[in-house]
Structure formats: structure tokens, C-alpha cells
Image (tube, helix red, strand yellow):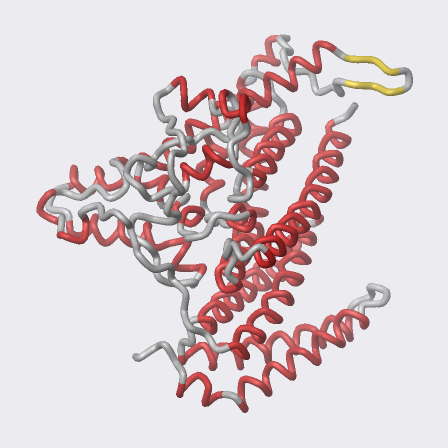
Length: 441
């Protein structure tokens, strides 16, 4: 089989997996509601999806760069240049006639294990070095534990993560083989973000399970920086970073981020590092801010706020947003998720679109920031929503007039009407944001 076949199979796998993920979030949220478990909050779900959309859209450009670099290493430094092919890009199974390719089966299995092993070390370093923690903290800022939390990712994480996997190119694992295994890892990681599943018997001995991954998200001191593996928990047991779930974790950060703003969720640790580096008295201390453990500061910069508190918080961040505002935000989030999916798909099909994709991406990020700040009743969000709905309705009108896609009007006309109605709602309900605003600036 050629490289293109494995790439297409990987894309097909992710399309089915993504549909299954959305279905599982819906099922989990439904059972959480009817069983009165409170595992989901609508505002937190919207915040999770918002950061996930930014992660996916930003990831397209990062993926292109990673593919280029991986291919460069593979072509110039791989052992395959010496005629050694340990990881043939072949299917482990054929069905007509049925046959098992033993060499290929072993190659795929070893490749998956190596991907998980390297991911363990990246993930562990992302918890023990500030510069890497800055690109991973977004995932841990959720104060809930459910399937939607798996979508929370930092826009910059994959820049560092893919660099860790370059040794695989050297030993002859081709990009399609690595990328397919990496996707399996990410899908498996999605499945362990749940509170509905208890301990799984003998699987707890060697697999990452919902129980031992809940530990990873805990803020209690006994749970901090534990259980980093993606699929096989044996790495944590071998290298001394394992902890068993003995009580329900308190999820989130030891210093909670009290906002739904997806930009803040992505950059707040980078901002803190930069500010602390400026305050350092020596170059050595400034450099240590990058590679020391998260929260490290020179003694002369430490304050009482830097002392680890337990519990990390007593109330979850949950602004008292009016019901009508939440209905509005929910509708806008659905539209933006749809727009984000289109941008992601178009970008994957043709990354040469350039400026139109970049402009659309920035508009999408602006929109997500705006609706998340609406949930927090920020006064200025009313103005950004007026601008956003005007731009969005104009964009949909342009698509309706100039697109050659069949039946596009069935999508654009309802979205144009929704944008206009949203604009009118914001204008006529503006007192809501001044009289009930949670922002006292």
C-alpha cells in the first residue's frame, strides 16, 4: 500500500472517531443530567469547545510544519538510507485472501508503544518544566472532568510535542505510521476523561484508565505531576510517577484561572513567565524561569500567594449568567463550531488558501473570545458582539452570493437570519449587560 492510502485511512479513522466523540459527550451529558451528577455545566462545556476549536484551527498550520520537519529528518537521517527497514509501511492484515503480515503487525505494535513512550516523556516534562507547562496548562484549567475536557488543548502545545517524536523518523518510522499511531493515542486519551467509569480490575495494572487519569487532573498534593502516560500506565510505574486514585480528585489548577476567556487560558502562564523574567535580578534566574518546575521563582520574588494551598479552591468558577444570555451564547457557540469545522476541513484540504484562511481563523478566535466573555457579562462584550454579528452576516451573504456550492442557501440563509436576530437582540437587550453586568470596571 502507498503512503496516500494510509493517510486516507487515518483521515477516515478520525472522521468516525470525531463523530463518536461528539455522540459520547452528548450521552455522558444526558446521563449526568438525569442522574443529577452535575458532571457538566453549560458554560464550562462552551469554554471547553472554544479552546478545542482554537486548538484544532491553529493545529493545521503547525501540522504542516511538523510534516515538513519530520520528512526532512526522515529523508536525510533515517536508518532506511542504510537499507535498514524495521518499520515497513504495510497493512498488517489482508482479507482476500485473509492473511496476517507478521512483520508489519509487529512494526505497527512497536510503533504504537514507542509513540506512547515518547509521549510519556513529553507529557512528564510538560508538568515539570515551566516553558512546556505553559503550553499544556490549558488542558488542566478545567474544573470539571468529563469527555469534553479532552478537547481542551493549548494552541502551541503541538509545536513542542511533535519535536519530541523526531527520533522516530531517525529509526525509520514513516510519517503516516507515526501519525496514525499518534491519532490512536489521542482517541484513547479522550476515552479516559470521564467520572462515570470506576476502576477496571486487572487493566489498572498496565493500562491508562479513567481512574488513574482522574488522578492526573487532581490538585491535591499527592496527585500532582502523576500518571503522565497516554495508553500504558506501565511507564509511570517504571519511572516513579504513578499514584493510585484513593479519593475523588479536586480537578483544575492549584492556582485557578477565573475566566472563560480562551486567549487567557492559552497564554496566561507565558505572560507570567515573561513578567517574572523581567523582574529577575540575574540572567541565570531569568533562564531558570524557563526550565525549572512550574511555579518556581527566585526567593526574592516569592509571595504568600505562591504557597501551595489545599484545597486549591472551595467554589468552582461559575458566573451567574442570566438564562436568556446563556440561550444566546449556546446558539452562537453552535454556529461558531460549525464555522470552525468548515475552516478546519478547508484548511486540511488546501492549506495554500493562505490569507482567507488566516483572516477567517482570526475572526473565529475573536468570536470565541467575545461569546465566552458574554457568559461573564463583560460590558465591552456587547460591543464586540455587535461587530461580530455584523461581520458574520456579511460573510454569510458573501458566501450566498459568490459560492458555487450546491444547496449552500439552505445553510447560509438561516445563519444570516440568526446573525441579524442576534444583532437585534444585543441592541434591544443592551440594558441586560449594564444592569446585570458582573464586570464592575
